[in-house]
Image (cartoon, rainbow, N blue to C red; front, side, top):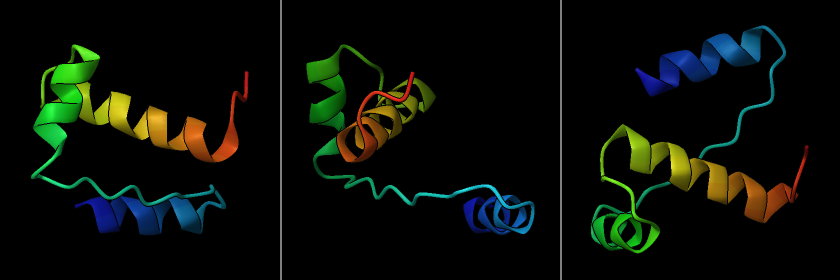
Amino acid sequence: MAEEMERGLKAYGHPVMRVRIDPGTFPDWCAAQGASPGSEGRKKFVAAAVFERYGDQS
């Protein structure tokens, strides 16, 4: 499903950045961030990865 979404976004010219989540360390990362390891944790993890790569874009 993620690959299909990636293709669709790229087709419309949107930039796409793949963020790999290690299932072995992700729960500990979420606990350290005060997030659940579900969608909340994934959103925070991706936001942190984008910030690490591109800095504050606001």
